[in-house]
Amino acid sequence: MKETIDYANQNYLKYVSLTAPKTKETRTLFRAFWVGGFICVIGQGIRTLYEQAFGLSGDELSSYVSMTMVFLGALLTGLGVYDRIGKYAGGGSIVPITGFANSVVSPAMEFKSEGYIYGLAAKMFLIAGPIIVFGVASGVLVGLVYYFINLF
Image (cartoon, one colour):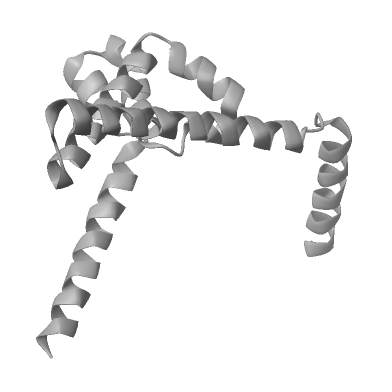
């Protein structure tokens, strides 16, 4: 039985390799690199603007820049622009903080026809929810380890 499954898997892999379109890795990597970098340059520009124009610094500056970038990512997703950026740049549009905003807003927009509670509110964190949960859990774990290391 196992030999039949292995043979079927090999045939399927051959079929996929023959029929799947070939990816252009160099072009894909270049697009991801420059778009992700450009998003980071925009974030740095906003940081410099807030620093110079409003005199912000430290955690306050970081918070305002993060909020602005999340807002811009959500706005561009709502306008349908972020999806086009994602199709062009691939992973380059996911990595920065704007990708997080996109992962929260996209499901919310998709399921809003199901209503505000069961659609919008329930599905909003469909993709980003596990990231938030594991991020908070990891933060608590690292904090506890740090606490116990410094305790002794």
